[in-house]
Image 1 (cartoon, one colour):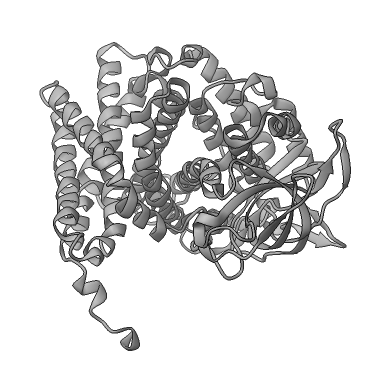
Image 2 (image 1 turned 120 degrees about the vertical axis):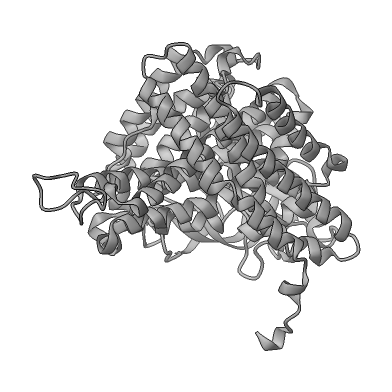
Length: 591
């Protein structure tokens, strides 16, 4: 069975050596001293290693059951959920007035990585709840906040998001679920939603569904969508639970992975709902939840890769296969360990360099969210809006790829269920699909985010990279990191220029290159992160760091990314500049 150890030292490195969070000046960040964050991460690591990770295989093998209208989670999940509740983990970054601890989202993101790596399917129950909390915080009335948030923060009640219907996924304008107004100000919600993660289960007393629906007579398409709170059990005026609402589970989906999470078909039969936010502005309210969820899914991509990498590394160090071509390394054994072989090293370095770069990218993104929320920083808000499809799309594509790479280290044993490696690949696979399939993320990036605010935010990113390179190009030891980053940034700018020159007269020229652009952007962002990590490592070594090997390892890994991964930007640029013809010329009938 796979094991997991929280990478607390790496997380601390990003928080303090790279981002220097406690000195950043963002309100509340002064609390994030290294001793404090270390204590929080250590406690999360213990819970993850001792409680959650051992249940990962259990959840995969047992799955959820739907019997007589009740959804049952796998053995051990309820007890683990109680421990998460007791620790207050769901409320780390929620305001104190609702039972949270009001710590920065940045720290909650670091903790989230640990929980996801240990047991992704389990973590989704509180993860979806956290997203629903954020939507109610941002758009709910005072009464709605007082009614629902304390119980959701404590995880006595959990939450969901309900968008997809059998006939429409991304194209929400085709939605049929309707909400009919009632004399008391409530609505009767009728329709069916599918693919609802954590849609129902036996771990909480109530489930608070956030449901998109159309009010009859409203505008056509997406402009007529409103958002509603539809609780599983109605809530009495005194906060106690009332009668069962008209919402039920049709079935649990049989899935490729995340078996421990109950993905439900939800039927709404005149269920009582309460509008959240403004009429016909449901997408604005739901996107509060979706943007957080998308960063969380990008985190899932690399967090699964981290867990897979840890086990692949252990196997490569232990498994004896063949001899090192440069000379025997294990003379007392019948063969050398796998890790002596260059292709195994390549495989592991691909994984290591991606995971550590993605970790820095994601936590930096979380810090931008904190700047936007805690300082009202519109530039930070615009920048993270630009980065969200990159974090989600690029990191989940690469995260799945790295889970498969980790499986490959095991050879045939990686394909055998008892070793547990296939679960990481199967669980990671959904991250490329839900919360907006990655092709849609690429279209969002190129079609909407690049031009947002007149292109202000992408230009700010280019300026950020340019400034970093200018300030560090002549710093001793930094040239080998700065020069590849410059080249990647130029490739990214060239791709953007191609879209500007060709996209207006032929939109397909831009859209056909959107997926490559998302990956080109992702590699450039990880290149920037690795350059920053290299700078921090050189500074630590110059300052006489006690753990020199840790920082030397960072530098070696940074060199690997710059030499073996970042050059992919040139390939993606070449594909983009080939235009739409290679993609669009073949007639549909000839495929």
